[in-house]
Amino acid sequence: MAAPDIPVNIDEKLAMLVELWSPRIVGEINDLHVKVVRVEGEFVWHTHDDTDEFFLVRRGDLTIEMRGRDPVSVGPGDFFVVPRGVEHRPVASSACELVLIEPKGVVNTGDATDLDLTAGETWI
Image (tube, rainbow, N blue to C red; front, side, top):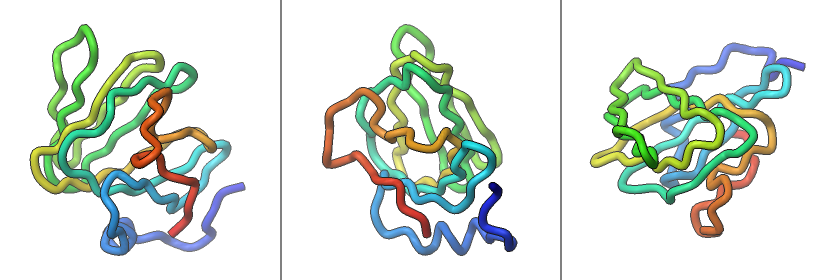
């Protein structure tokens, strides 16, 4: 079931975010969640063994570091997909706003055990 059944303004949803690295759900399509998140600094190295990870930059610049690969720079309006099973770490040297698309139930920290950075499945 698609949700919500009204238009969603991504900028308004991003403006509601207070915490960094804490994705919030803004929509649902099939078995996927559309999420928004504000980030700054370095995230934890982690892997998602069963799913690719989609990053769309709305504002700011994001670097995605990946083990055994060159880092990827993603700017406003750009997106990048980290393939499943690739250990990676998003890094933003300054404030950055992202849209994520991922299967329901995916934990933002993947296989990492850093509970301070693990976000729940929360709608805004």
